[in-house]
Length: 583
Image 1 (cartoon, rainbow, N blue to C red):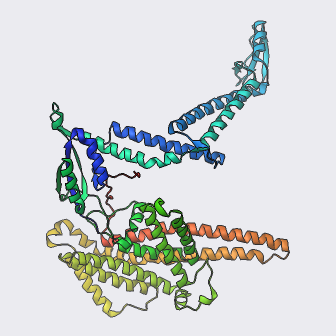
Image 2: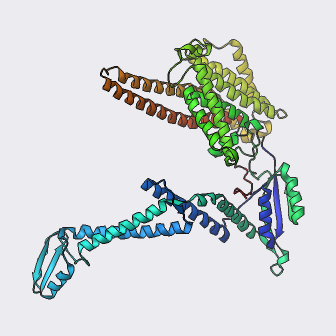
Image 3: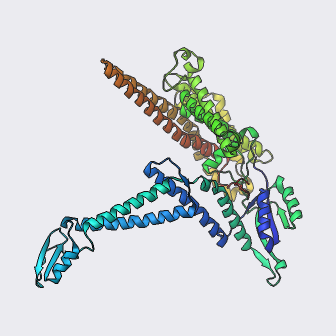
């Protein structure tokens, strides 16, 4: 469900701003409206966070450059940044020295002091930018060569410049090594606290931007903050207001207000919130919570798109390792949610591998006669396409029936049930087009006719004909779009089949290496190559499977299904003002 929200207006004495925010943060139930762009407090806190993040990036980059994994000691953020500034200065100096060496290198390691002594005796050494040199006697002026210019004498011998460059590069290497071996675990652990400080400073700036009252009397100056709270937490806030002496007003959202969205699915399906956060999506406050069908169908899509039980077993092994590595207090709620999701998705993929008998693109012989394996292995692929169209029709019809039930007290529910009938008819049309069904039962034409009348007659109320009447003219296009929506679910079969075929081709490529090998050494060499091809090939296929999930499984839920359900994903998540760092 999407939790109902209350609009809040909270007032406190200006001098109590910080203590009020601290109490609200401890309460952890209020989503603050931060309309201010921020002031000095936020800028200071944000600068501290940016410096810490920059310091960690500098250490990580230096460690990568050196291939260092050794940690010698902790360095403060300021020390790391100062070392990096010094290193950049030295790099600039080194580039300048390299330029000098390139410029004067062709003339060799001569002594410029001696050259200046000769000049006082009437012999001037002339250096040219093409690498040549000449002598001018007694104030003689040499004829300029076309495109060649005279360059000044160097300030020092070339060998001295090279020694300075070597010393500079040595110092750069020493600084880089010191940075690379810095222990930044303490800085990383401080990130949550620094982010909390930024959030607190932003809230403080917001309240300070909303101060009003008698300037001559501090006790009569007040700070105001606006926000949202879940309806079932409102009483907790009222109790806190009574305890702290705040002024508090709560009301239902106005029609022109857009509250944040707080999803509260059934406990079994609550981990899907992590998937929503990862995708950066949230239904609008006025829309529906589709967490349950989203997770169920996403699990099915995940399994079919990966299409291989062995890949599912790899996902499952990695997930179980994650459970083990994050045991105890190190497992955050978000990490736990992702582990639950990956466990479900991996098990679904292993189950699909059992049903289709697909393991690393190969089949287990003693499972070949299983009914599901034989049905899914239909050479014409008709059964797989039938399954995809059935999944698609059930997904979309569920959306329309759900809409109808939710609007049961409104006449538009008739149109929603009519759309369910149209989708059923289009399901038979789709299967007839590809030759799975020989035709459409005559009773379905009556269903389509009645459904069409229901949609046309009840989609728009008579009072809305002037503003929404054009939607009825779009009905033929919307019906064709519904047909396309069902057909689009064939991607589950197409992408899954492509994954299996890629695996089969890598298997054939690898095993084919042994066919022409007769000598023992050749067989050993070909065996090593075969293993390399299998590992790299299936690893690539796993990566491609992951990309297909991000593209296709997400699309079918957030586009096809959501369009029929009326979910625009235009909302923003409820983000209460609370402490993220451990106390």
